[in-house]
Structures are given as structure tokens and as C-alpha cells.
Length: 152
Image (cartoon, rainbow, N blue to C red; front, side, top):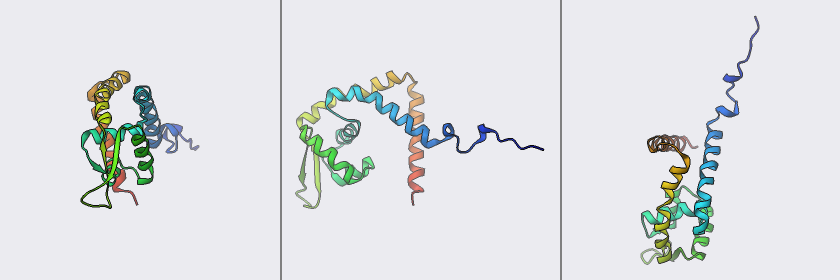
């Protein structure tokens, strides 16, 4: 009796890896954003910061870090660049000197009108039904929750 290995059942097959699919999907989708964000002077990570601020401001750096799930060392340079572009301002909290507060400038608030076109354009370029993208978002949110719950 010979035992044959079915390569389709290989647990290490690259095309079966969730991490590989997520990494390629993330790079591919973020690549769609790049030409839309460049005229606004934003990188994708900076866009995420702006989305958080358009949703609610002012916010502490700590709150932004938690919301965006970014380390302070990663977030700080993003904020410096956004401040240099005059989209945000940073100041110490009047209530608690330890807190650094971030808020949009008038220029940063005005940028929202241009950014509002982006989600529709991304959906259009993906060419996928919105319901399918919403289901994907829900599944990814569950994956993030499961991964966070199992982080050592």
C-alpha cells in the first residue's frame, strides 16, 4: 500500500493561508485608495487618522491609538505629518496636562467633503456588490476580535 500526499490537503500550502489572503487583499485594496488619496496629500494610514477625527473630535492621542489599534510610536509620526500639512493641531489638554489632544483644523474639516467620494469610488472600482463587501467587513471584524482575544 502506498501513501500519497494530496497537495490540496497540504496545511502549509500558501494559497490556503488566511494570513496570505489577508496580506494580499490588504495591499490590493489599499492600492486602490492610493491614487484617490494622493491629490489630498494623504497616505492610507493618515486617511485612517482623518476618518477617526471626522467621526469624532477632539480626541486624545491615547484614544486615537486605541481606536486605530496603532502603537504610539507609529501614530506619532502620522500626526506630525498631518500637523505639518495643516490638517490637524495638537495641544495639551486643559483638564489634564498629561493628555495630548488632537483636533482638526478648518482645512482638515474641509477635506472631508472631498473624502466623502472615496468609499463610493472604492466600491465602484472593486466591482463587488455592497452586500458582499458588508459581509466581508463583518467577517473581518470577527477575525480581528478572535485574534485579539487570543493574543498572548
